[in-house]
Length: 256
Image (cartoon, rainbow, N blue to C red; front, top):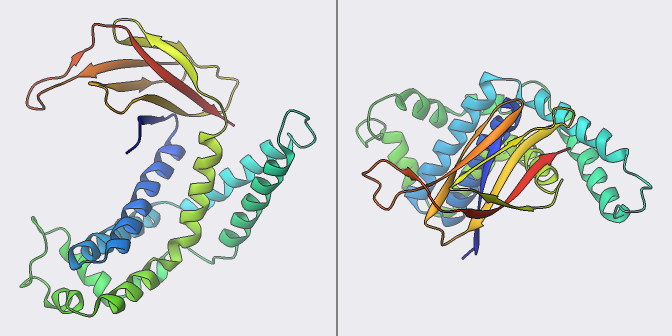
């Protein structure tokens, strides 16, 4: 079990979209690994949500733009003595590889999944209140009753068009998350506020607190400043209250 919890706040819509997709990718991979029929159903739902997300916007273009931007920023650090050049070259190589993989994809990512009949039928029924029952879609029950190994292969095939996007977004977020070190801060009476240097390409705020804490951060961020209120709530049925004591935490203002 982790000794600390990290709360993240995206500072623009692009990073917000990447974090949503990261969660869907993680959800798919978790349920694929466990493999029961219930897990498989959640894995299918994850694929459908990813497909809906990528169909609404040209996410490939946004990811490519961010990869190229990061590559240019990191390339400017080459030959700086304080930088681990071996690690930097490895990251630049990975970014270049992800760019090539995405550029090789023609059209929208995942468009071929729309031709999978079972996926299409599930998508059509997904608006029905409540979960899909056997009488709604016998074809789904039939598929879930197939051998585990066969379902696993189908899921991997359906997810494959999103594999390059998954790896690219994970690389982007890893670079952002490691772009700065933690700073030790104190929220007086549970409140902390700080200005944002608008000359820096600020992408993400990360708040780290001990895992056993009885409080959690609510983060509000604008273009020029952000604030953190540490809240406590022993009973989820009641309204949370701001902590009255001083709270120590670690802050990362990720910019690259």
